[in-house]
Length: 274
Picture (cartoon, rainbow, N blue to C red):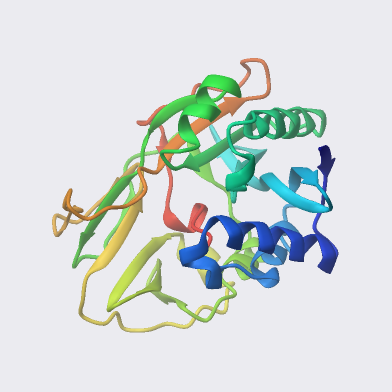
């Protein structure tokens, strides 16, 4: 077994990663391809991915990655990174690869001067991030569905994503995003639209997002810290979805204010990989 830092700038590395993802998520195998990971890991204007991988017999058998981002913290722009696409091949689970690779990536991010790391985790990875890798649990994201689209920041939050025109051009380059006023929406499927988020018009005017009238039908919201229209209701319990655990690790030795469920404004555009 070999632990290796990869940047996924070659077809060989991308093919190995796609092969691993498909082996784990068999029912969603068609969702994974080289262009998806190249988009997030290589093309990201904030920088290349921080990724550590377990290699056995020439194949990637476990993968951890943190993608660089910018966040506003008390009005100051800081460098952070978000974990995504963490996976271990079924034949190699239970061997401690997750915590080993995560802790290696955390130390690399610290060496590179990132101020904090975070993730939106599922039920499987959440306890390992918290118990073995130094992350703190913040809260679960709110998941709501309904007919309204009017969302806005609820007060002036301490933590919020920082977007530039260049970053938005990259993030919203897919054809299924569109704009209505200062709101960004996307096509989720089966007639459902996603409420990707709200940004100021001055910033959105610098993008090439198409302006559309929003079709009648339900809208899906996932996030924190927003004022929401009354027409958005909690997703019924019988509808299964990820618990969307928000976790956080300060890499500055306590120089940052604590992140809490009440002081962050977070939207689908800030993390959703679709």
